[in-house]
Image 1 (spheres, helix red, strand yellow):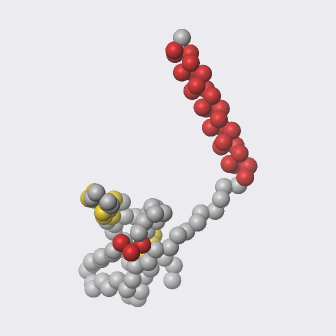
Image 2 (cartoon, rainbow, N blue to C red; image 1 turned 180 degrees about the vertical axis):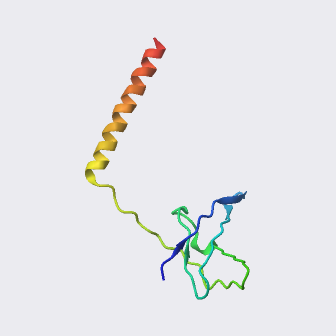
Length: 105
């Protein structure tokens, strides 16, 4: 069964002295019948997997069987692309430094 990606932007944040509670909300229309796997990407790498919670509701009964956290590694950028970006960044930084030096004169 292919996973269905859920777009769930941050809806609410409560900040405590030692942590933050972040609530995301999203809507998804599921095909009729059967079990479905939903995924939510873009979470911080340092998330406490034991703190994850999920809830659902709909026009029919919704049962959540489980919630799990998986780290998904993205493919690395091709070596040439990385080199080009670093070079471009260095040129931009040098232009900014020259510009800032010209403003001080």
